[in-house]
Length: 81
Image (cartoon, rainbow, N blue to C red; front, side, top):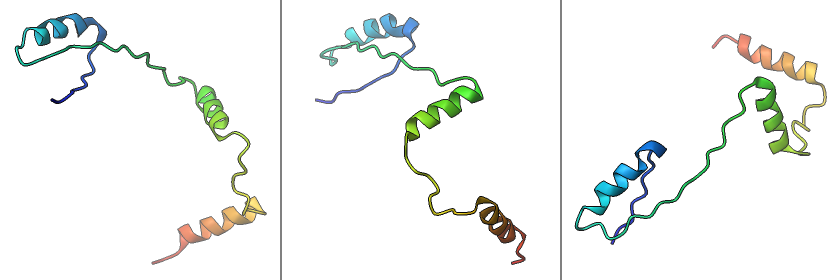
């Protein structure tokens, strides 16, 4: 036996359940509702969410002088290949 998981718009759930229940080889129709969280809309909210996910992790510890690090990156961009 195989279990299939199908995601359906809320307004179509009942009609799909009815169709599936009328098929002879479908043994059971279960309904599981999930609540979707919306992504933050504003840039501020997105940045805040990212900062919360990062927490207290130390990022870019290897960069001692940010200005010099940027200069080096730009030098790489300007190289002729």
